[in-house]
Structures are given as C-alpha cells and as structure tokens.
Length: 323
Image (cartoon, rainbow, N blue to C red; front, side, top):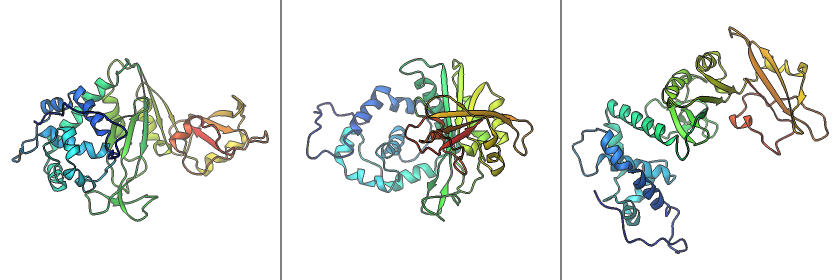
C-alpha cells in the first residue's frame, strides 16, 4: 500500500488552491482512526482483480461523497488529479466502470459486513469526545432522483423533478452528533410510513447498552398508529408531528391556550383519530401575532421536523401540532 506524503507544507493562500484542498485533512483524520486497517480486518470480498485493495475501493467510494461529488461519473476527473492521489496515498483513482463493477458483483454477505462495520463504528464514536447517556434520534425521509433505469427506482413524490424515477429512503439521524444511525432504502412510490417499523427495529438494536435515555423526533410521515405503537413498546420519549387532517383542525379553535413566553402559547388535549385503538396526547403550539392577538390557523398538510424547535422571526401565523 502506498504511503502518505511526509514532506508537505500546508498553505492556505496559494493561487492554485482548489475547493478540494481540505481532503488532505480528512485523509489525516482517517489515518488517526486507522480506518484502512479496520476495514481490512473486518471485511471479506473475494475478487480476481487486486490492483486496488478492498479498503482502497471503499475509500474511493467515500472520497467523492465527502467532496460533494454524488455520482461516479462526476468523480472520474479525480483520475487525472495527481495531487489528490499523492495526498491520499492512492496509486491511482479507479475509473467509474471499476467502481460500478465492484458494487454490482458484491455478494449479499458483503452488505451485511458493511452494516456490522457501521454499527461497530457508531457504538465506539457515539461516546467521543465525552461519554453519552442520552440519544436523540430524528426520523425523516428524503427523495433521491435517478436518471436511468436503476433497480427498484419508481416514479413517486418528487417536488424538484416531477415525473422522474427516484428512491424515497427513510433516514435515522442522531441529532447531537449528526451520525447516520440507520437507513431503509425504498422505491420512489413507497407508502408514507412503509418500512418505518423495520427501520426502528434496526435503530434500537444498535443502541449501546449504557444509554439510559432515548428520545425520538419524527415528521408527519411517521404519525401512524403502527409506528407509534412501535415507539411505545420501547423505553423512549417521542415527539411526532401531527397529521393535520380536516377533522383534526376543526378541534383547534375550541382549545384553551396558555401563554408559555412572549412568543408562544400552547394547548394540550387527548384525541383519538379514526382507526386508532386509543387516544393519545396532542400538543398544539402557536405564535402570537404582532398585534397581540393569536392566530390558531396551522399550516395545511404536514409540518417539517425542523418546526419542532423554536424559530425566532418565524411567520406570526405559524403553528405546530405534535404528539
């Protein structure tokens, strides 16, 4: 394996500096973690071509993501970037076809190994730099557009590229560290909460045994009874944005709101939406209008997860409801 450069002078004012100059510091960070050796010890993938080691192939997929190059073809210019290869210690950068072939021929056992490696890294890093006793898990979904005939991609909700095929993955992010705790890949036309229960099962399996408190936050796409029952079956506290149906919004004007500070006033009540076996506690928060009155009109549809936090300077008509 090629060694990293030793005689290197760090300069931040050279006119040849590119947007990717910081990759050297990321490479040094990986060196401190000894990530290459960790991958070599914990991954097995028999291949005929050994020009690149297994750890080098994994890092060749990681570097473009860190540099903001989200497609293999876009990262092909790194093959002609000798400085990048010198800084990272790679003998050369694999061409896109080599990377695609590496992913395409990977056995199912390799995916399971990668999942275990990720879980081990999470359980070690979550306590750095200080030991943690509480986790805050954010559940959300995203839209990843594809331009081709990729497997399981389908036409679904896609606000930016309407009518294009996409994936609709579910994501679980640990809020304090921003670690990707787990993910569930879904087709673009997947149902709103499809795969949510399976995602939560794997998320809780990865929680270190010395974590005493778990809090879960989720947007309205997770506000369905099976998901809530899965959360209530575990020792968690949760806040899920309510689905603002017409029947729900008709209840809001009759609530008794209490002021909690200069900006917010809140109300809480028990409600049992249609199809739920029991009632659950709902909390509604509204922002005082500038004239001193309160507007209890909430945004139609689903509210984003970010609305669960205090947002100074927000629209006076904004309100949020969660359970």
